[in-house]
Length: 390
Length: 156
Image 1: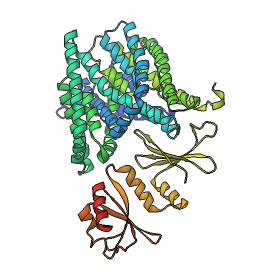
Image 2: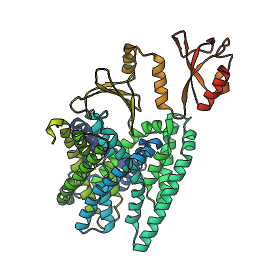
Image 3: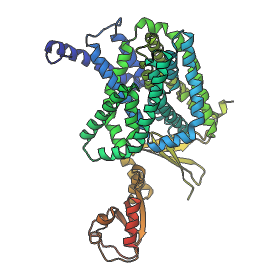
Image 4: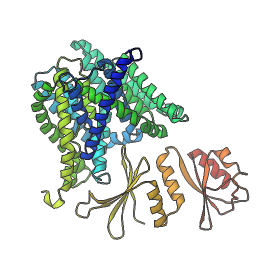
């Protein structure tokens, strides 16, 4: 980028970036009015400004790509920051069975559909990952918008999200290794290195997390923001060097921070994340050809049916285990249907694969559908009275 | 007093609930941000809430005042929820006479006296000049070790 040298280019870039940001702001408001997340709208906006879209941009794709990458890192950092070590431990103790059911019923649809579409195994695995994880962002928003945080099924829902979060700590590097591996032997090696590296990073994070947090604690907000941002990029870069995927590095930084620093860092990086992540979703949509998205509609609808049913089964089972009655079980199941940020992050890992275009299109269409249908289904499930459910 | 049940809500905060004498189930949800919600459960569907009241920290204080709770317990509640590794202790003094400053309590133990309860009255956030008397109950916040040291000083 030589923005400073060529002021004419810079002016054009500013105008384009400004216009796009304003469009995103408008979309975010519309989404909030509708009670859903803005992610699907951002994907569609990306589609519109991408190649073959209605208003292609001139800004250098390299620049957007880098900002988008930082967006992923910040997304994962804040996901790691979301839960305290205590909550993770508690989630592990109580949520293993529902977590396993969740993994099986929701990974399988994506994986199988990927294979049926004739994709390579790594691409199918990534699609499985994309259908597996619910969007903790959308779920949290739905629960709070519908005033369901007090409900009896809510802790089970939140615990499932914690388990998925932890599962991602293992799945992401594995999937990234699979996506980069060439032949079987090379893949096995990268997977092994990735797993070992994750365990080491996690152990170090857990062991020295307290000390790191204490070290960061005293400074000003400005210093803390810069320190967390720097640390996230640094660790992510090192993880990438080890071929572990930068995302997991950022995630682990979030996990390692604890205590008051955790909450402060969460509050400080939140706005930064919103900005960069919006670019990431935009960029993801940007790379999809509109034609591919239309072709992806049928697989995405099949996945909506299968993955939706999988989440309903999981949620109902988990809620039933907690002694929640049928209406609450339905509420739990439908709330989990929405997929979002994590699914897009997982699909983006496959950018270098042969089936990357199809994978991105199917994942985007699937996220679009579930993010729209999920909150609506969750809302409808709440109107069902105890007497109306058999 | 009815039994209060505590449920942790990962990523959100903590929920306390109890059943009123009239049989209504009530929950107080404390967000990490300090925001609170009061939820009243539905009689027909006991898993769901039919009314939810949203309170920011000012609202919470007003409601606490109206319900007759003291400011101290509000402060303590906030401290207990926000800080890990910090404990609260109530220490009954066996002898008195010195002020909080004289005793150099914070310097020596790291624990802070947040309130003094005397003859049913509360001195909230006492200054260093407050004189401690035998029979006072000192409410202190600190690390468990600091509180042990403080107890050894105040009630040997």
